[in-house]
Image (spheres, rainbow, N blue to C red):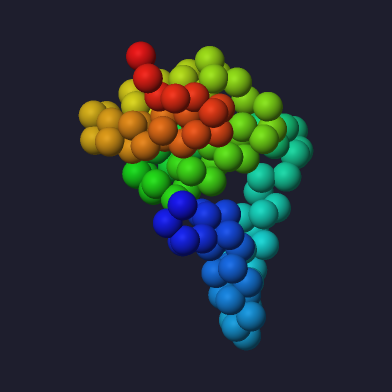
Length: 117
């Protein structure tokens, strides 16, 4: 281990630091983000998969990691992830491929896969 905090630890620590500031716009945006992913007509699992597609298309590796972790925790299986990846790739085009590689690496990490053939 490199001694660096995990993504989740870093995210949590920095979110706390950001929300310590007296800035209502930032606080409201964070709240809006949290509220968006709560179950409604669409369940939380579906919303996480939608967030993952958007993150792939926007090429945000932190967002991709976050939504993979959330979707994985919500019970999305590997086959469903690859359908989500497929949608992101078709919508975003070939520029998504490097982010798709990192996405599969995160999924392998969560599944405990070796990443081998």
